Length: 435
Ligand SMILES: NC(=O)c1ccc[n+]([C@@H]2O[C@H](COP(=O)([O-])OP(=O)(O)OC[C@H]3O[C@@H](n4cnc5c(N)ncnc54)[C@H](OP(=O)(O)O)[C@@H]3O)[C@@H](O)[C@H]2O)c1
Image 1 (cartoon, helix red, strand yellow):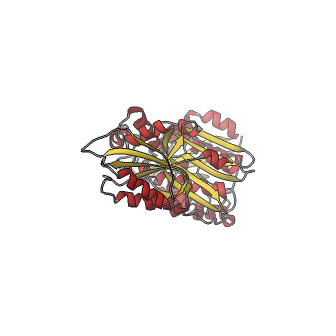
Image 2 (cartoon, rainbow, N blue to C red):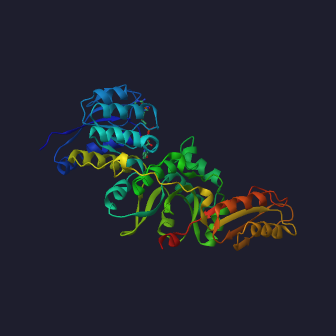
């Protein structure tokens, strides 16, 4: 048997302790599969005295994770602290400088600094692995970078944030409003005390940037993506979507078109019969459309101690075997820079919810504005009437350009009979994209 793979683990929170637990529970199996044991030699976190439910006595403790990355007796450093900069980035750089491979679950760091870190790792002949950074247990990095490497990918989209998917699913199942379900998700530990990273779409955009780089072999800057979150989705929107045959999902989409790339994160209405519509609760899924393989969908647990540890240890197994693939599938220097197509150029059907005071002539005004912006309506739904209060009126449109929709809604919002800023949700057309 070969000598053990020696591992230093930085961060002993949900994923760090989960990784230790998995490595210990599966020690024999892993040793058999790798032909060598996987040995943790050193660990680091902030508070040495915190009870973490795992025995840390067998490992050398470091108060300073960056020092550990440089000094520990280790072949590989596992970064499970989090945050795009700070100690996570410093220890990754220190590990590479010291000639150690790095495994991380940190999507923010890879999305913002991935190219720089990958270039350093490549130059040193080291692995920088990050399967756990996108969709937890779902092996989507490997699927895109290796499994589908024979294809040109034309589009990928995914449900990449379990917190948002849980909130949207629970809103639909219980007919409750966003704020109420978010508060419950926070109580249950599914949402952070400060949930903005998740619900404003930033976490999804980090993961989309990583997947798009891999899928399209291109440099992506985090600011390239259009990002909108789920705060404005109401119980009414969910009910109307249902009535119209859709589910609302927070999707991250990367799509090649006219020699450029569209990158967008926003709530989307997906047809109920699309496979991704039935991905519910905290689950994640990614669907890829490619020229020879056709449509491929992966679904599974995107977070939590066990699923994330599974991905971290999968990367450790590759390192134990000496399997090495360029971080982005191609060396960093060979990444292309595709033009980014601005969101104003997006074309598709739209759902619009207006809160309307039911006065004579209001529909004529709305219809005139839509006509002036060359937007053609497909359907109108009004379920309730009130002489005193605003009531929801929902329109769906045929295919139209985003810039026209934005202009029309700004004008509609100015009408005296409109009570709130109009709310639009983009309707996804997977079939059209597949043709
Ligand atoms: N949780 C998930 O389900 C999940 C899923 C996919 C990816 N991830 C990613 O995995 C990473 C870790 O997430 P997590 O949920 O495990 O976080 P967490 O529970 O908050 O744990 C973070 C750990 O980092 C330690 N830490 C913080 N600052 C440190 C420093 N300066 N030096 C050494 N240790 C430090 C903390 O120490 P103390 O315990 O002493 O405070 C804690 O043990 C993040 O990048 C996250 O995005 C998480």
